[in-house]
Image 1: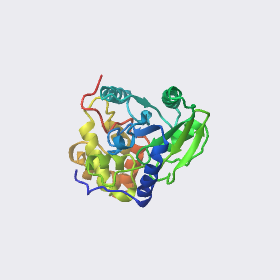
Image 2: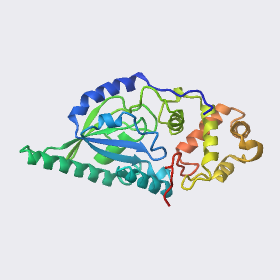
Image 3: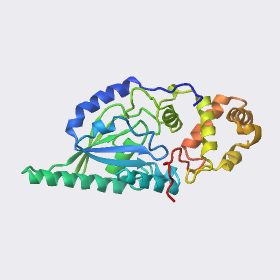
Image 4: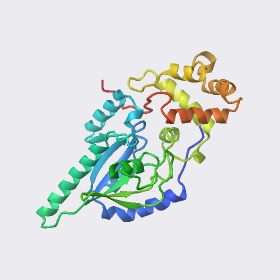
Length: 292
């Protein structure tokens, strides 16, 4: 990757991870939330250590931001790994009921074991876990059916842990987004930057926008990726062909047309448009074998 190394591990995340470790013994269920556009890059390398001996529910959020073909391909891929998934869109509420039902089923299994040991049933304690800005707080607000935790589509909004009661069956712990201290996989780091899952201070917007264009060119022939270059050409008036197929030239030419030559502003506009799905439903990651 041609962009400078992307690293982001602010103090509030380091502090949150320490708090998280202290709460792990108190929870029965880990509800891990990932971003449908980058389901591998939003998987934490320490996850297996944290979920050891606990129920694990993998929720893939923002399913509306990828094509149905990408969604189905990933669902089959995770199934082949022995991992069941629940796909949802916390913003619109689609699939959230299925998330709640899956969490309650996990709680019923827990309480059945408690009864077998002569213990009384109790509400299941679930921790929502995931990278910054994957939609954990939005999911909790949908589950509770009111805004009980702060939520926004940018990294670093949640900074403290908070318990939320969901009926008589489920207690949810909303935790700040967690990241590994070092992003060794720089391709994954780029994906996190593109999806706004790390802070903007971690990267150069112009270089990341150019890397995004290169990524689109590489994905355009992949089934299920959803890349339609004509959408960019129609939106910005700059063809992605010939000299302007080079990302640096494309960004410069498009900046001349839209932002008075300000490439930084044009880069931010391009990234914002992707993040708002104005360039179509695009999956930045696909399994090695896309299932038709």
